[in-house]
Image 1 (spheres, rainbow, N blue to C red):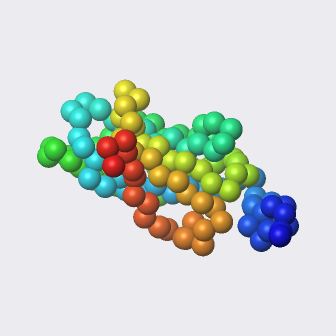
Image 2: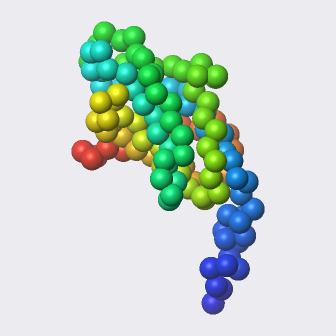
Image 3: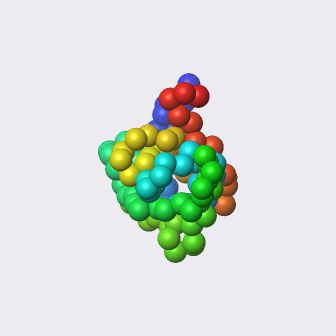
Length: 121
């Protein structure tokens, strides 16, 4: 059998650069909390890499969609990890949802939608 260090994925992971760009364009159908703002945090296996804080919504319904401008939603993430976890939460720290982005997945090189999962499914 092949050892982990000789697998194609191990070689690709070793070739990953020390930084990635993450562009958050929208937070869709987020349950609105009056007066709350939103935070997007990015983690690798070593801990938090970067975050966007103070994201404001403008909806008056129970849920809202927040659109971020290109400059506002851009995060530089310094990591060589093959996967990062993106967590969205209210400014209070209450968890909204999480997704994982695998840098080796071809979709990660293009603008792609990722659904957040939460504790409730």
